[in-house]
Length: 557
Image (spheres, rainbow, N blue to C red):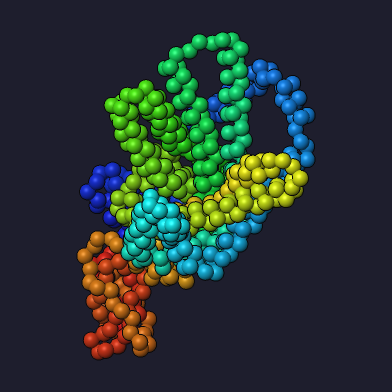
């Protein structure tokens, strides 16, 4: 069965004929559900309920146990604080955050104007930093010189590998970033969505800190005795709750941004995209977000527990256990990285089609298995650009907090030490503001690549010029292993548009001739080819729907 027909015909045919049964079975998940539909049931509600219960218990426990905290001591300590220094610190941190927000906006504008320069700078930022650090260490002979030469050599090798491995992805990444910034400018509310997510993440962490502090005070006041196993269990639970809430806040914003970008892609950007995307993220797909975040948080909490046990084994001089725990932690870390990366693409299915988490994972696995990972590599380049921009803006924001605090407190002793502390808090706020501006880049890149892999024809209908540029620039990374003839190069003389019909439609058009055309490799349905007739006439032929590389169709002229 070919389902409801919501999938690109070429992709549908490839999925249903795939050798992997999981891929074949997942075709219906993509083909039966309309993208960006409004009538969606709530998915994975049990996990959303579990998250609400966890949050409620955490709030209730922190509130009910707050009487164990001696707030009188805190009030007395606050009276001893230098109010002038406190106000100066708050001003410095706020200014640092505002500066970071403005710089991130400027970075987006610069990235839109000089995209290729920004992409290359992001790719070479790490290698060049190693080279600069190595050069600065050369005068520190003899150990510093050796480390310096090693750092320079490593930086040069990384730069060479970067140029060789990523160069072919630059043109498509440039177009992708320009498109994403254009959509972000049209839907500025995405920035406030991600900013609200950052605030919710901080609020969750503060709630966890208060709860843990209250728990510690209760145990200390009751002289509670506990063993190592219970300590490890509590440590794991605390880490898990910290991570789960933070990931839920971050991934909810990711799904909301994915919904906005997908509605733009499918031509539904004028139908309240922000409100409907928020409804999906916070209501219908919130359970799926909680379930995916639960899995990653469980893996990461396990990794943190293994790290704790490894430290304890090292303190007990037990090298065998230490090595075993280290190896286990590395395996768990790899599993966590893969799952976290995979979830980023699976959440796109939650945003676009409203699938439950497990169905979204199956659909994403089918797309990755059939379509390859070259487009995903292009998305990773966008992530590199986002990371560089956020890092630069947050460093400058933190430095601004330090400078302002030191400038306001020039007459105080120890201003440099306190200024460093203020600079660290300023950096934290600054990176939150920078990520609030730049995070939609990564969500958008993930969404557009998934949607382009599923239904390239929708972009051709809603934004034909952009679809043409995607098709031409995407040739550098769309490497599907089909048999076909080499792509025909454009000719300098003028070409005439002609009609194309599939090979199965063999009837002769009245008063015309027909030319047999083989679809070249890396060419998709809807793209335009230039071919030359036996008479020497140059024609422009559009590849008909359903035609795959290696198949043949007739062009009438």
